[in-house]
Image (cartoon, rainbow, N blue to C red; front, side, top):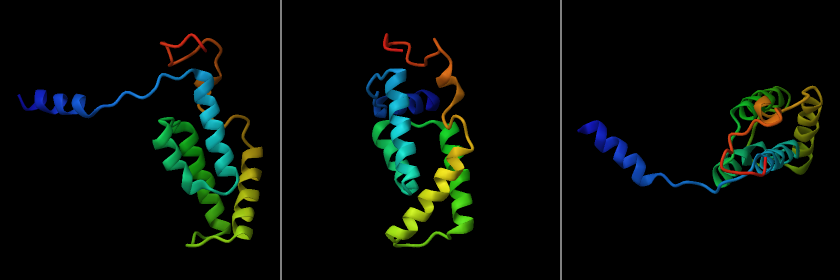
Length: 120
């Protein structure tokens, strides 16, 4: 009985997000990457939650890149424009070493988790 109530409570509070195509998912991930490469890594979590697009592969990569940035530029409150630019420069250098920052499954032709969409 307790298991049924637990499942029921999850169903009641679950809200289905909009159906999006693989192209839309990649576009959203590219927007997240652009934001990060401009030195705004801290905004990624909010972007992921507000748009409902989160790629664990990309998130892990960004976490590793952020650690690399913090080795050279320790994190602190109130980052100046010059510091943000320095962070962006390091991130862009790290990005240049990776051929594809998103989940490799998104690159396979005909592969889509978006089975309700014809726009693959």
